[in-house]
Length: 341
Image 1: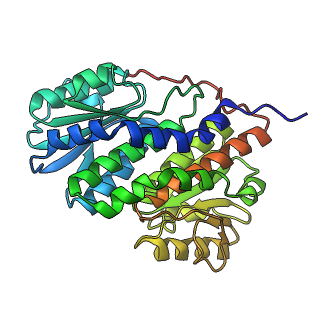
Image 2: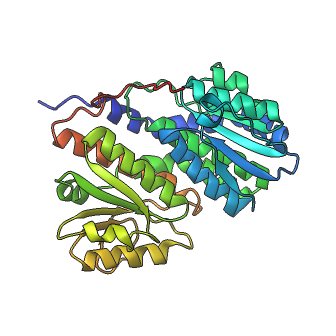
């Protein structure tokens, strides 16, 4: 008898449809947000936690590489615990939360709104407290997400934020690549990473990335922890050969996320160097010499490549959890919505 699909797996398989729905239904909200912030901002801020904060790390690179404007993450406790007010006039703030309910995220967003920043809520609930605290809202249109481990809401948050940045830049090539994503994400789910599943047998692993793909490595490490109880640590490929490499021994699993961007060659060199030390290294690139090349789906733009890569990873990590006898829908000690103050 075939085992029933986990809720997490069903939601992973919904990712292409969710992105298509966002692209179909979200255009007006993205245009409104563009008009709201089309005032020559001086810098960007982000407010988020957990998976949503990883989305903001991706958007940070997209802002800095695409718009030439710095983006900094602000700790929500600045407002909720310490009661401090930031002077943010002229800034644009992306506040990202799938639920839009966490009091600390809402409080800091409201504080930044009051201080003169232009605030944009990126959320799955356009009626949430976060949406009310922001100047404008971009709904991610993911639909209900019941599995504790967020998957489709992470992907749609990436797409919504990147789409807004592309509109601000008026980057027709990137906008076209974003609209081509649904069919490519469907192919990404089918990428066979069974070699990774076979290699990840212990309780520790590294995930690597650089630039926008470092955000993907961060998210992958969290999902290893959440769903598989694997102590995975994420590093930039520029840093792992310093102190962290001393942990690496024969068979130590390393998953390196590469996109077709300016960082690919240097990241692959690091992946090969770790493989030469005996680690079991897997990389989403055809340029590797000693690391194992994983099947991957390249998109029509290097900034959308990481979105396809994380989709392939989600399908794999769900399978790893199930192979370890764990239910990825109900991770130990976790709830779907964590409301921090």
